[in-house]
Structures are given as C-alpha cells and as structure tokens.
Amino acid sequence: MLALIGLGLDGTEISAKGLSYVAGSDEVFAEFYTSLPCVDMAEIERIVGKPITVLTREDVEERELPLERARTCTVAFLVMGDPLVATTHISLAARAREDGIPLAICHASSIYSAIGSTGLMLYKFGKSASIVYPEKNYFPKSFYETIVQNKKRGLHTLLFLDLKADRDIYMNPVDGMRLLRAADEETIVSTIIVASRIGWKSEKIVYGEVSELSSLDASFFGPPPHCIVVPGEMHFAEEEYVELFRYG
Amino acid sequence: MLALIGLGLDGTEISAKGLSYVAGSDEVFAEFYTSLPCVDMAEIERIVGKPITVLTREDVEERELPLERARTCTVAFLVMGDPLVATTHISLAARAREDGIPLAICHASSIYSAIGSTGLMLYKFGKSASIVYPEKNYFPKSFYETIVQNKKRGLHTLLFLDLKADRDIYMNPVDGMRLLRAADEETIVSTIIVASRIGWKSEKIVYGEVSELSSLDASFFGPPPHCIVVPGEMHFAEEEYVELFRYG
Image (tube, rainbow over all chains, first blue to last red; front, side, top):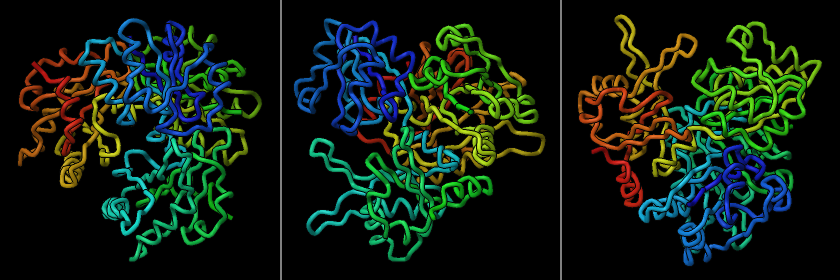
C-alpha cells in the first residue's frame, strides 16, 4: 500500500490523517528534489515520530522505490506541499492505480490556497505561470502572456519562480521581477506582491511598486520559497488588506 | 492571541502545526456555517484533544466572539479547508491585525489544490466560479462566461456549487449540471468531472459526458461537498489519468 502524504508548506503542516498513515507504515520515504532542501528534517522526523529515508530523483523516477516497496509493505511517501501537484507524484499515483496497489492521498496545505494570506480572493486568480531562467538566445515569455490575458479579465496571477532543487538553484524575487520588467515592454504591471515563505514562521509578504521592489537587495526577501503575485482588479476589501503589507 | 486554523477538507486534515496551537490555547472555537455541517465533531474533538465550542454566524460576524476573547486569552478558531479563503475569515484576520491582536494562520488542505486528485494540472486551471441557484426572473450566468473564457485559452474550470449551510441547502451535482446545460446553448461543454468529497474516505471522482452524468440520480454522487470541473485542453498524461474515473 502506498500513502502519498503532503507535508504542507513548511513541512510542519502534515495533517492528522497523514500522521496516522505514517504511524501505520512499515517504511517512511520523503523526497525534496521537486521543492527545496531547506526544510528541518530533524523537526519533521520529530513530528512524524519515525526515521525518514530521503530519496533522490533516480530513486523515485528510475528505480521507482516507493512503488516497488509498496507492492509488499505499507509505504508512507512524504512530499512538500499538497501531493498530486507535481507531475512526478501524479505519475506515481497513476502507476499505483494501474498496478492495483492500494493508494491513499493525504492532502496538505499548498501555495495554491495559502496565497489567500495576501488578502486576495482565490476565485479571482486566473491561470498561474512560472518565470523561468532565460537560456542562450531564448527568453521564454509565456508567463508574461499569462499575466496579460489574466489582466484583461481583471484576474490576479500567481507566478512561481524557477527552481532546480537538485542543483540548489532558486530564482530570487529580485531576479524574477527583473525578468518580468524586461518582458513588460508596455508597462502593464505596476504593483506587485512578493510572498516569501508563506506558511513558515519567517513568512514575509511585501506589496509595492515593481520598479521600487525590484531595486532592493535580494537578501531583503530572505531565503526561498518565494512567489510573486500580479494583482488584477482589486475589490475594496482586497486593497485594504494588501495595504497592510505596503513596502516602506 | 488568535490562531486561525484550517481543518482541511474533511476535518481530519488539520496540520501538526495547527494541533500544537490548539494544545496551547485557552479556548477552542469552530464554525461550519461557511461550509457544511456533516463533519464528525466527536472525531475532530478526539483529534484535537479538547472540547470545541461551535459558533453561529451571529457569534462570529456580529458578536465577534473569537476576536473579543483573543484580546485577553489565546484562542484557537477552527474552520473547514484552508483559512483565508472565505471572506468572513479574511475580515477577521484584518480586524485582528488592525487591533494589534497577535495572529497566527495555520494552513491546511483545500479544494483549490486537492482538485489535483483528478489528475488535471493545477497551473492549467483558469478562474474558478460558482453555479448559483436561479432566482425569480434572474438566472445568473456569470459562471458560464467564466467557462467560455477559460475554454478559449484551453484552461480547466473549477466550479463550486451553491450552498446555504445555515439553511442546510446544498446544490447537488445533477442540479448543477442541469443549470450548466441550460446556460450552455452553444454546447461547448461536452465532458465533465464531478468530484465528490475530495479528501474524504468516501471520495468519488466521476468523468464522463455531461449529457449522460446529468441524467443520473443525485444519490449516485452521495452527500456533499461536491464540485464540478470542466476540463479545457488536456495533455496526454491528464487524459490518461481522468480515464481512470470514466463513468460506466
């Protein structure tokens, strides 16, 4: 049996249901290569009350260790955020279903709903997008098209920042804003929200002009994870709330 | 101090962090009027290990009980799903911030990310919308406009169904599909996913033709909560996954 268990935003938001699955498991695996390595493993082991084996991408995607072990024993597989967000986990769940391995999903907090901490209404978010690092002769602008399309409908845009966790590379919000400004030739983006470590003790939400925030030192926003929100049309109550996070 | 704590989708997805806030609180409140009353209160009290006082809409919005008590003691306020999704909770958080009452938010699972259990990719969802009950001489169609706009961009649409929890009224998926078909004069919606009790033990995901599913008896889908997804363009991996839920 395979239980796919979300650890939530900061690793301490595993659910009571998830904890009960860990308690009943023969083996506890975790992976952090789809998210970030700066979680406190000792703290997570203390919370779940069992030792955890951290798997690499090869362990999961090539050796299919969680799936193989789940054929004969009860496996708890811990992942950051909510499971079934990353393609890797969806594939794993699909494989388990196909092979007739009993599957349990334990949901947990995720940035897709926790971004409500900014005070923006979730139902007013349009498609989300990722700002990715440009490569030689290639500057991917599809994230900007998403903002433009959402803006036309008055919708907010949640922007993820590129990460290559297995190489310890995380785009910082200042680099993200610079790429956004480079794409934004018509200057349709004026104000912006930088949401850092949502759900963590060190959570930091900053609202302000993109021209101003993008000139700050990256250290101002602290370590990852970060995301950026481009607000669409704001209701009075939303405006009032985001003002609580105004820079300066 | 006020801790706004999500109970997650089924009430058992409160986080380890949330549990620690409950443990340290002087008083534990909960409200269910923004969601649904069919949670197992005894089970939730067993999980959190403390007696819970369930508040009415008047207690929260007029008497502002959680806020008043939080001025002098440590209050844990439990709500279904992720906090800061419902306007009521955002207002409460805003009031706490304005009045200088220390505020903690404990995120939990929410349909906004758990809908990933359908196998559809979250970043391909557009704006969400609600199918609401028509009133005399008034048939609100804005949810349909949202579907049309999302479809144009190839995006999926998450549809909530009307609920009036304080009057124990929950739109069932069959009524929801009928209202959708009535609005859909150009028949742009063919296949649909009905997602029932996502994250609950009795979770049921059904994929099929809206013409076929809307002719089923409402009891087929079981008790609330329900939501409906209108898929946009599906990637091959998404198609393969939703086929696991094909009706018939």
